[in-house]
Length: 387
Length: 95
Image (cartoon, rainbow over all chains, first blue to last red; front, top):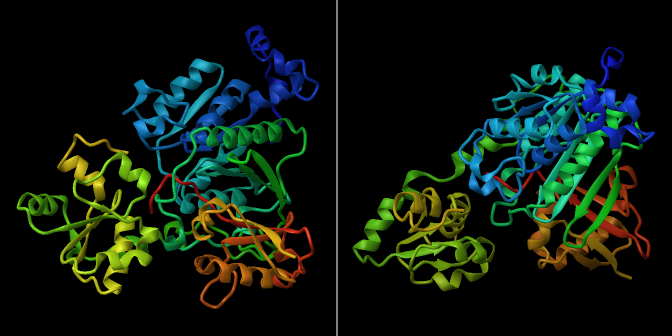
């Protein structure tokens, strides 16, 4: 990090604002000036990015960049605490900027209204000291990691799933990178779908504040950073575990003979593009209008819902039968004798897998409801709650 | 003597929805074989078609990555805890 703290000072207001930092020997005036001179890029203003940006702003980090192109949605508010109810429908960058300005007008917020890509990552990262990874998908995680290694910036990593969180500092000098830990992403088929998804709203609060803590420690240069260590937090058992990480000399990005020296196509690397093509042909699909017509005509149609029971509780298509995707293989006998079958989930991914499975099991007349129950709610029955 | 195996959240659905299970084995490899015969659905998530551990699933004995010990031949002692730690991107997107 460049030390240009000599040219800057603190106003009397800033001294008052940061007094609880200034009286600690580990921070002091020097540390506070380092924070003021520092710049951090938050990739994502979602569950993790919210607490990261809020606390870094309050702590007095001089420049905070945010990369996000999303709009605030009601379903974000359970965990994305930088956004409020009046912000629903606004770009996340706008509401994040307003909230940061309200907390600490001394901070310069730099909004980047783009999707992080191999084309822009290195240029975006250039202006920042530290990158905080608050993303939620594999292609962007590998992109953030590789771009951090290539540009020599630490990657403050956090990840959340249901009640479990992970955190580490990757790509620090002499430390391991994400690829040392996981050289390759899982193939999309093996990634738990939203059936097993969901997240405790407070979880990103815990993991994000750990990321913010690590960013502040790296800036000030105190304590023992989370380098070479992988922290796992289990909220249900309220337990932290720590695993040892090592730099892999054969790592394709940060090893001794790196094979990846420039950014690649991460969608392809993660196999994302293939999945969409595999999701089924038109003849295996039905639209929500088709289904409505069949139901209205009182046709003998079997509607199979392959979501989880807790999702069925939220909303369901009248007359549908619930068999969660995970239980389907052992409950196929319940479908014996059914003719035409329309299978649905929330948005069509799980039901696509179910239809494939049903066809293989001989239920050739099973069709996937395109767009799932979300499409049904949007186009047929807006009285049902969306989730 | 059975050892504790910590199952990560995404794989619990394949391990009887439990977060901790027990399995026996003199080596990590043997223990994982026994684990996957107990919970057959786990096999596909831990091993690829060639029977090798998948590269997005790491196995730890206590706090050490078996890749830096003797891999699957790493001996297991009484009281050792095995952790399965797959990569997790975030649970918000269906893709």
